[in-house]
Image 1 (tube, helix red, strand yellow):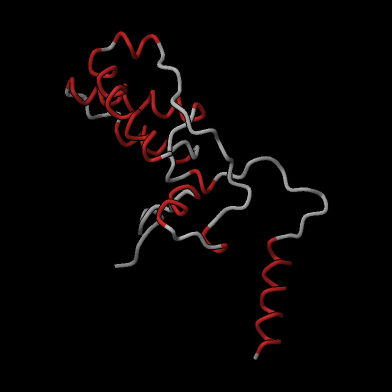
Image 2: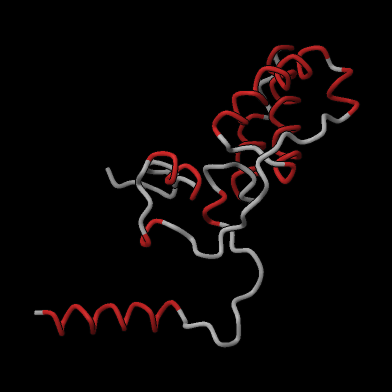
Length: 142
């Protein structure tokens, strides 16, 4: 059976490729945003929710050790821990929608490689021109 848009592994971020030693020009987004690696401030309503607060305190040090957390990911982290609190309470109905929302916005380390930060420079070489130049260089070598 043929795959769909969910088939295969999710792409790794530039940070994940660097940590794994698998950095390659073909695997990276040159305009991927570079966020500072630091823990975001914990929202008050997360701190007041026992399960969400415990999950925040558990997961933030792990994400810091992996170098995959930033204040830019606060909303995604907040949504995750609040969802976790709902899961602990037994509510599974929001899982699919939340996962898609976070993924589509590129708010997780696994999907940040699909995000383009800013607009390309006026003098920048288009991706098509880059591919054509690579093709031409390969044909000259042979």
